[in-house]
Image 1 (tube, rainbow, N blue to C red):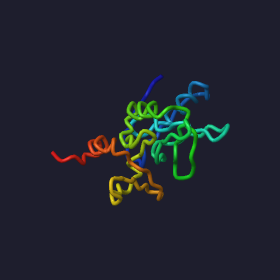
Image 2: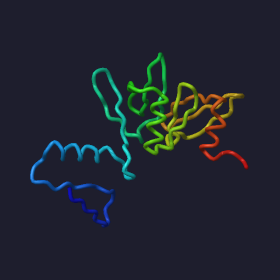
Image 3: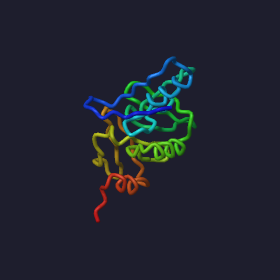
Image 4: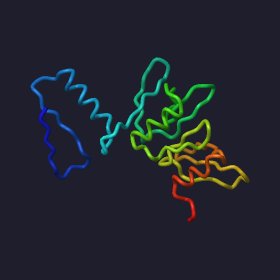
Length: 155
């Protein structure tokens, strides 16, 4: 397949596919491109609401958490079942270059691009405040790792 890149002024990068007919291969390529962000990495995961599979963009995720031996993805609008384990999501996030996702406890991974503040007012407890007003508690065990990833460590 021939490819061509045109450099020109446009708001956001977009892709146009020229073909004589729409084949399943062309449709598959278009779908893969649609799921990518500007860096070329996959930008969606699949969450489940009953029998419905819903594509969730990486930027819409507030946190991933486990409860009652199931893993959920929380967005501003909904909470969906995620059919993977927390460590599998961590591996996926790392391979996709999603550096904003940081493990905050044994049961939580937070998207720090959606965090407004780390509330340390309660003695011995660190609470994360999200942009949607929800909160999550940080395990003291993970504070060093979080500080390192957020470059909050003094040298």
